[in-house]
Length: 297
Image (tube, rainbow, N blue to C red; front, side, top):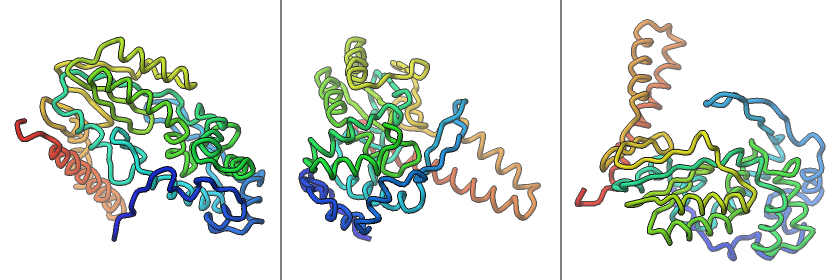
């Protein structure tokens, strides 16, 4: 299957879009359905989902018709060429790639943006469509209704991840410039930021935090970590010396699944084999991440 060629922001079909009927064509819906998608009071279903780290996250799941339109928006916006530092949401880049680019770094600092989607405001989404993509006011307004809910990007929408990046593209660009000025390297995986270099200075981290605050975001204090000269975990991958490794908990989980398989019923065994296959595939992906190592490593 041929890969889809990325294009510049100005080559997006949303660029200088001035007609709602043209927008409807782009989204493969009628003009009447476009209005219903934007104004249906029952377009979302809310429910709570447990977080891996404890507590609950509110999910706003779009109805099937709205979800289809949001998927189309996501597909088109995701074709805008991403910067080198962005790893999610980017097709063809993974959580392993995000960690592997920091191989050989002597110093690391990790930040996590707190409640990222709920703090991605509709005003910034409107800025993206009106100012960066130069859409007309009526097109901007209806797009904002389609992709936001209760004043922010909803968790559960397929286009929220790419919009969280593009709507704050000025913030990300500022952060990257700040990190580069300090002779460091930045990677972004959704709401996870990793800064690496020979030395990540406190003033660099503080400058990044100030940029986040200025754009309406905060970092999660309990998830901030700094590492120098020792193994570090980045997006579920261990950086150890000059290579990426699988976390020990992954080996423990595989051992546990294999043990359960020996006494499993037929139905349970099918599920366990699927879990085992997935975890073994993850291990292979991590090991393949060492292709990022330099020849001298």
